[in-house]
Structure formats: structure tokens, C-alpha cells
Image (cartoon, rainbow, N blue to C red):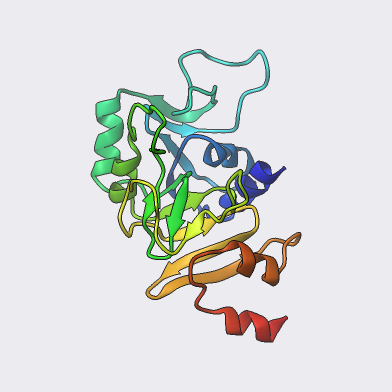
Length: 215
């Protein structure tokens, strides 16, 4: 339920005509919640443009997948192409927004998304290119890890994927913008409370006084 909640909230960031890259995991689910009547051009780093919602069972095409190898639909006018073309779009600054997952984000907008010490991983893939090549970076993730610890930290403790690159953080509990001195709390999920957000957010929230006055 938390994953779908985050995906629905991601879709509220879409604007008509926007070119958006959706990363592996929760971000790809937001393709199912594009507001009716809105044209959003979705890009996948493995080489696809103008993909849509997940296909119905039995209607998949093995040549059409997102970066997580999940089946996708291609909208009229869409295309599939090679990695070189895809990363030319990303590195060339042609993507308006990327939405990617993370292991940790800190109050300066740095993000760790690819390596946990002691675990064998193949590398960060295209994440670094997306974080630096896209005009806006949105992180979508659960608010806490499996141990109940905050994933929104004062300073990332894991190896970084990008330094001071994040604009917005969307979790299953809240939405933050990264601002000069920390994190600006934008929204609190209806099933959460301000006290819970304070308790579960390690990073500095700069506008808590405003929220305390309004509640």
C-alpha cells in the first residue's frame, strides 16, 4: 500500500508536456497514475520514449520493458532505441525531471542509492547520469528502513551517488523540498502526523514552527 501511495503522489508532480525519466522500483508505478487528459512523455534509461501504464496480462511485448525489466506499453508516437541515444537525451539536458529511488538522502540533497558495505553490487548503473543530467531530481522512497531508522539524514552514511543534487523527496509519510538550510516540509500524509514526521526524520526541517502554528 505504501508503494502505491508514493506512486500516486509522484504523479502529482507531472505537468503537461513534461519529459520524465522514471527509475527502477516505485517510480515506475507512477506511470499508472498520470492524470487523465495530461500528456507526459515518459523516458526509460534502457531506451524507450512515450511509454504508458503497465500492460494487461497477456498483452506484453518482450521487447518493451523499463529499466527494471518490467513490461511496459508504448503510446502512439513512442519509440524504442539504444542506450547511446537514451543517455544522449539524459546527459544532454533534455529530461525535465527524473524520479529515482534511494537508500538514503540527506538535508543537503545528497543521495546514496547504489552500495551497502559488505554486499556485492555491480555498480550504480545510470543513476549518476540521471542525477546530474536531468533538470529536476525527485527521490521516491519509504521514510524509514527495515530497521525503523530514518532514511532522511543529516548526512548520508553510505557511498554517494550524487552530491547536493536532490530537489524534492517523496515518501510514504511526507513530501519535502531541499532548501538552503535543510528540508522544507511541504505535505504530511493523511495517515501520519507532525509528531511522527519529527520523530522519523533525522534531517533538519526548517519550517517546523509554521506547521506547529497551523496544527
